[in-house]
Length: 336
View 1: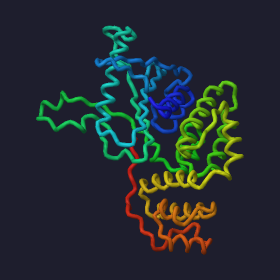
View 2: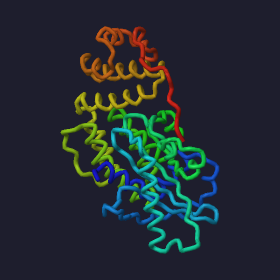
View 3: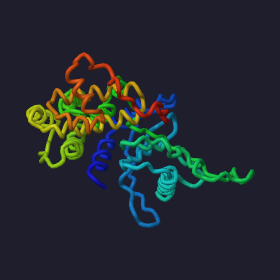
View 4: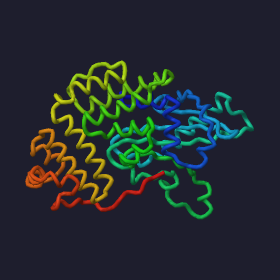
């Protein structure tokens, strides 16, 4: 398990993160019946038949009315989309139920607890073509046989489906995590870290504060500026101070990389006007940082003439390039 997987697991090993993930991104009426004060981490060292233990997923138990509910969070970072994720999830839930039976948490005659299976995904491509229910990856069966086919649906939380405005309006630590994943400049990261410092100042939030510090120092910053020596941070204040001091001296490639990621997400969203505006805004921001026309053209796909025209016409900040035509015209449907 890499640093990214470990750091995300560390973040979602905190009750506050799980509570906010459910309240802000599940948005179903039954969530209101959960007693979040009863959240408790479940030891998920399952051993499957091939003797490979699963430590990379996060499992919580919580009281839902008078019942015990299990929250299974599978954290997915792979760049490709797993078409058979529903099969994987069915296997993992089977191992969970088997563990509950072997440990005698659930005894003979008792019913197994309900489980909410969540796939938390933050890859660059949108999770559009992978079926969310295992029944949709199984061939149609003859009438009568269909009643024996399995059904299991997982809840997909794809970070890339949510716009910046929507995430900012949520004002939660989880939404801040999603925002940091897509920020384009060190200045933006500094601003969000300052907000995070203010929100996580309570003594009982020290552990979560430390988890964010680890993630920023070992995952986010190294991914944005490969090759640069990132110091070992011990607190969010140190991360904020370092960025504040060095932001002006960091080369254009740092910002260009972040902008490229932001554009990629914007393009995936497929909103024609918004996509063009994003490209123009990005080009203008890069011009203000002194980044060369060649680099801007490579990152934004705008022509040299378009970029030079933007540089000479500052009043076009909010308008899309006149002769730039985005390829995609459809807006993806957000999955629940």
